[in-house]
Image (cartoon, rainbow, N blue to C red):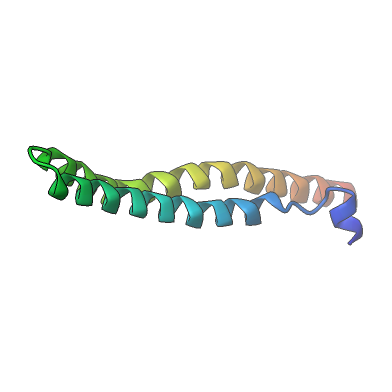
Amino acid sequence: MEDFLKFRKMITPVIIQILFWVGVAIAIIGAIGMMIYGVASDGQGIMVLVGLVMLVLGPVVVRIYCELLILFFRMNKTLTDIKNGLEKR
């Protein structure tokens, strides 16, 4: 609890993982919605294709974005470990 109150333990990586799953769900629901709209409307066959592309690339883009965010926290943890190791010498 002390590490949490002194900001030594980060909660943001956990929040980023939650946001990843929310982003994936939004991407999939949006893609399915586009495909349904494309099938239901006349002359909107391109929407089905865009929906399929979004279905595949949407979760990948969300994953890349979340990995970039987590990278900053991993770098911070590594630098903190290096600092603590040097202080023990």
